Image 1 (cartoon, rainbow, N blue to C red):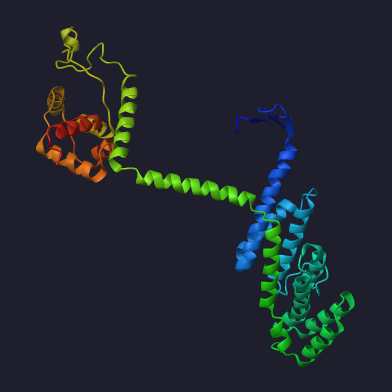
Image 2 (cartoon, one colour; image 1 turned 120 degrees about the vertical axis):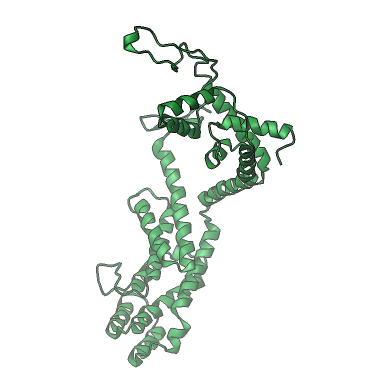
Length: 377
């Protein structure tokens, strides 16, 4: 959360920068307006791309926000109306979809009614008239294209009674209907694709006046920063990264080991176990102890030792006491591990190669010795 603001339980946001207070509903209103703009811009984009699937999915989310909000601003209300218009145009050829209680009202007929409500939002009067004529023609033409002659006749009758359909255009549509020609010159001149393109032109003009891209620009900046950060991380030299990883691993190991006792008060190893009949305590052989170092591989080795017979286990424990010299095979594995995974990946190298009774810290120390002696090739 921003240090300059704090949300209180009473629905009040206090600003510590100027001492003022804002209600949560005010902030919510601004946030919601940004979201409305983002969804509106997305719907316009998907409409122009003719991506029906994404348009429908985004429209459902848009409806959830705007349909239950009675406090939309005038511009937002206009955007809501435009989206209603776009949905009807998108479903223009789907005659099974209805936006009106009257099932005889096709999507394009309903779009014509919505378009009349957007007359003040269209800056170019000629564009508004052109789209209007296209809607007249295609309302009848789509029905003919789908083989719905009776529905086309009902549509033309509805246009004559419910709209101000020009007489000249009415006569031309009647002629097309009588011929039942879905490929008439009038329908080809005022085609459905031309309707789509004309509406796209209107959207471009509207978005130029009302950009609605604040949230999109903010998100774009975040994505750009993330990409630049990723590129910087990829350009970091591997050796430098390995050194940093090694230092971090060393710090973690040191902090872990410093929490453990440096030595034990009593040894847990017994060379001569105590027998009840002797009435004597077991003989404990003291030995020099150091920091306890445990890695996943060494832990597995200890489990393996526990499964050995008693005489072999004792021999192994005695061998483990002294400092064991590094073998040529271990040095070869260490060089191969560094070549494969890089310096600092000691735990990974320890897991992938055979290093009996070794720890990651031992591998790091041995590699430092090899480099110092010039044997790290």
